[in-house]
Length: 402
Image (cartoon, rainbow, N blue to C red):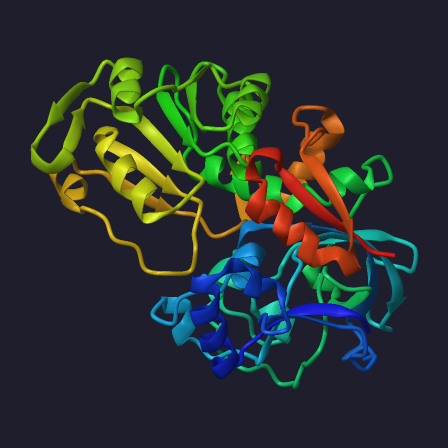
């Protein structure tokens, strides 16, 4: 089996951290904690409900890039959880089923599938009975994330490889009408749709989308799809992404000094204190932060009106520093977003993946034009380099699996 994974090797990690601070080129050497192995032992299906999937396309997301650049922090809450020595990368993918176990009910060889559940939940570890969140279809909130399952599961692979093994419950079948390029974008679209459904837009609300990458662009189109009577603003520095956001339904792009632009867009009052300290009274109703740094967190809280809502989608698996004053002073609401799950939509309970597929088939949303770069699997370092060094050109980078 060929596969790319993140290796938990502390001495190697520390050495690359130190050298990478001197020169970024070290991240592309053999010191990298992101390892490409072409000789992993082929694995049999671990059980009767498992399948083997041959990958076709895999998208690189911000979390994959964070692993490559060693961004995860040992002080982050996730780092306190037990885990394996390897994290196989590539959860945005589309592939073809090659082999099925005897108890698999809804998939057969030749079916195209995409990976839905990639967090370590009850279904993936075959834990019975499942926790309350997994029973409700909220697998990303699994209470057994840190618990071992009854089987020792190793080297299963993921999207960045020739194939991977997965329980049937981890996968969603892709309809014939959806292309591979569309299918590889389903997971990212599901993240954005989940975020919008957690805080649905209301008539007349002024909403800021902070960041015009894949997630932010999809947030824009889902906001306008669910309620075209809201007004959506985009804050993004790259002109091509600004234009893409406008095509997807953004009403306006904020330009110039962001504090002044926010005050002008919302009619808020901008106040200036010492040491560059600024605060806006009467800002946006909702801000979807698709960047998720300390700076964007800090600023977003100051750009919301009283009792406004901050929706945190972007994340970097590390502690952040921000001024908490606006949270209690303005009685703000903070909503965290962890991927996707089950949704309440138009009186139905439906998984985010199934809903994205339904909307694509109906033509109510589009992922056309999101893929900007393609690389063969062996050129994964070139793919990461493009994302790091030429971000102004990139929306989505995909790896083509031979």
